[in-house]
Image 1: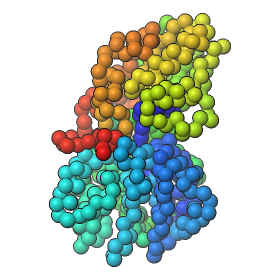
Image 2 (image 1 turned 120 degrees about the vertical axis):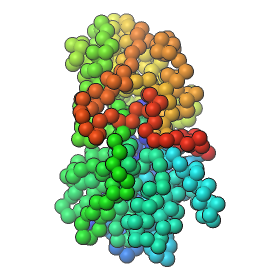
Image 3 (image 1 turned 45 degrees about the horizontal axis):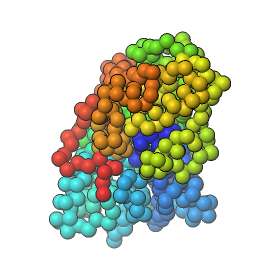
Image 4 (image 1 turned 90 degrees about the vertical axis):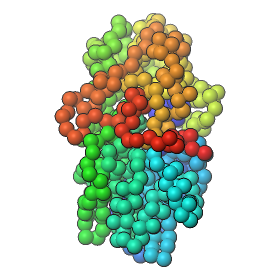
Length: 470
Ligand code: SF4
């Protein structure tokens, strides 16, 4: 993945296990499989039925949890979180799960997504005397739950969830129970599975495969699941609305071996490539994909066009996180260190370079240059998603509008700026067809707001994209 240098980042991944003696170890493995969703902080909270323990820190899951620290996390239930820290919120307090203790017991919360009315709720809570300790939206939810403390916990959570708006998959835990919730539009993915008698919860299904668990189903939009020693109970805190799962999960974020809404991500990306070949054909000798996330779309483009797929670009797997750098200069250096063009494949050839998206344009310009320096006669860039023209308010760092190259330039201008011989993007219709294949169901049509500007929820005047929060 080149997200960290491309300027496209997922906010988080969440994973939990209930009723397993090695719940913390399994949660560690689950979070490891979700590491691509966030590399800057990780945490695990465990419960032995009476007491809860929390451990968290900055860095990769393997850096935060050496074996002795993991061994210390006893208990049959665990929830965990990996996160990408947005500007200004990289402090230790913001690393999740957040843990709150009171006389009535503990509550741990892990959240993937972003709330669009968090600012309004924070002002309201502060005006009523609450003292917020973090800049995270997640804490707002904890306060709302606490304020409904006179109710049984499931009702208090439902009441809190009915007050928040935006994108959220929540995993919460008390000493005795685990709670899982998906927002009324199901913007972020969250699924449940089982391993023997244990229940598992994950942002992506690939983590179930890693621990040998069996996928059961997705948590439905507006559903609250309560897991305890008696089993699992489903409640609704919101009436079902048409699901608008984030299209970028299919395009870029999720692992190719995950399934979203029953559809395999690799197969969906291949269909995007095939549709792109039909929408934007070109005379060429080889098709190559930008590793890793664009390989599936490149294979699809090659299959549909009849132009052979070749390994024109290879990734250096041993470049560390040093290259997750905020400055433009270091980002550019990062591209060079991470990728190489294969001269023996591209020299003297007309190359179709398939990429999943263009954010700032810096990465594309570098790769086109790299291919030409390796002797490519022509480089035709084909993007397996529509132009990103709008910020995301739902938990994806797409950069500010000012930095988005497609928000400020025509396709022809971008083509010139990145030095391509031609440039074409997948259309919004093509993207929807590739993902949903004409499915007529409640699930038809995901969120595509960063391409279209049609946000599936209301956006408040003071709604701030997560990466612009101070
Ligand atoms: S705006 Fe884009 S990135 Fe954000 S949830 Fe919608 S599709 Fe996903």
